[in-house]
Amino acid sequence: MRYIDLHCDSLLKIFNKSEQENLFENNNLSVDFKSLQQGEALAQFFAIFMPDEETLTELKLEEINDDLYIDRAVNILEQEVTQHNQIVALAKNYQDIIVNQQQGKISALLTIEDGRSVAGNLDKLKRYYKKGIRLITLTWNYENCFGYPNSTNPAQMARGLKDFGIEAVQYMNQLGMLIDVSHLSDGGFYDVAQYSSKPFIASHSNARSLANHPRNLTDQMIIKIAEKGGVIGLNFAPYFLNKDSTNSKSSIERMIAHLNYLKNIGGENVLALGTDFDGIHGNLEIASSKQMPLLFKALARSGWNIDLIEKFAFKNSMRVIKEVLS
Image (cartoon, rainbow, N blue to C red; front, side, top):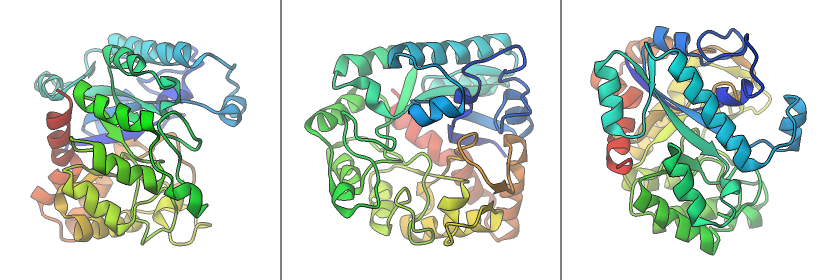
């Protein structure tokens, strides 16, 4: 079963790469090219996560200018793909993915998680687009030029996009860049729904009714994404799957529960995959790209037919890619 994963943080883990730290075969990562090949991936979205001070300290990274950091991360992926171009190739649009598939190659797409480096400048968006960035997760856990993050504070959660955020959403539509509302405040979410003329996505979020985390989506949000023609990427993180936030197990059973819920609320065309691999922790029943067939087999055993599994695995995401990434 081919699949598209809309979000992983693997690039961050090899930012200070040595000879042992690579993307071809890396036992320290959930996502590497060999595992993607074993799991029969069609495409993997690689996030350039913008680290905060805590992350810099945790990963022993030196503080670096945001744009230099982005340039270096892009170069790392480009170098890795060049070294292993027999199995993987960069992609910037729908046609690239089709061509790569015909050549037996996995497609690698670049994203930015946290648009803080845009810094209120539309020219930055154009620059990133020219560098191959095809998706931006508008916020992470902090306020930035686009708007405000998800929060347990109701007043913060209600805040919408800033004026620049509205302008940027419309410009991203023009450029052909995916808008990702994972991490965004509820108010910002509804502003994106109002001002985006193209489908938008939640690349790695689940159902808030099943796991009451502010990063997850309410029923009305699920419906709104579906109405706009977007998709929701199933997140494998335990705290986005389980009702009990202290439960550290990420189980296939809970994944299927969220998928069935999303399907029942938003319809089968809203389903997608966004593992958040290499950005999550816990007891993961699926801990690597090579294990992805376990989920598809479990879905089949639970009664899903092949057409529905294919929609979830790659067809819905391909539809959005075709419409947005011009």
